[in-house]
Length: 392
Image (cartoon, rainbow, N blue to C red):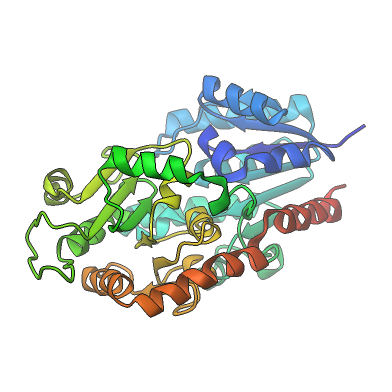
């Protein structure tokens, strides 16, 4: 009989996009139970991946009453299923999963840290989030930062003891399927059609951002930087009509969590070279028609989109933050810039657009550097080995 493994995330989008087929792989060795909120979406994800599922409603915001309900429901689930391992991802699922599993007597409680919202918090909110993080780690038997930067941050802030911490492989929660994320997977006809639909001209240099359109992803700085770009044909910094460059924003606008500045929204709406697509289930075509990923985020764990872009032969401009500065080697497969710095974003974008030899070298190195370090099968097998080591 297989041992039971519960994987819990706050929302099923994380199970679907951040873990995906890893759950199917683990289901060959364990009886995997996927736990998250949003019943209809969770059901679709679980059926697609061929695993069992259980609904525990959770919110991404601070909600004491709902959080206690979530904890109680997960505790009861653990008492019923009696899993050998509970493995949590995302902050809210972390505290619900680790505390609920500890109270239920689950022997192995693993928590993966993939980004810390508290890094940008201040005052009372920061102290409260620090306390929740420490309690999560205290309830866990093993804590896995998915980057070296997060590992050091956790130690520096005394969130837990060093003997609980480990980075699996080279980092990343799931690695990257470089066969799926490959330029060869997108037909030339599809690229031509998508460019036509989006109003992108053949000679345009296309910058791309993929992710939530919120403040702490650096979108305010990105839009201001793009607004100041100039092409070889014109030094006009106002909205010109000349061809030359475009900015694709692929992702949902989440105004309720971390809204963009009103002037940023106005510039996005009025700039003829900025194209918003909203959330996209399939991002590969957008990567395939782009020239460079720009990802000026304030905080990350180990950003999948930077892995995906590299696998699709795109260099990346990233902030000098956890995860990003491990995937990107400055001047090799992308450029690393200071966080929260509009001028640095602008200068890096201008550089990759104007310096053709630099761009050629960055693009040439992009895919091989991802493939050699973060191939998905390597990450999955390293985690499976860890499960075998810690499972009772």
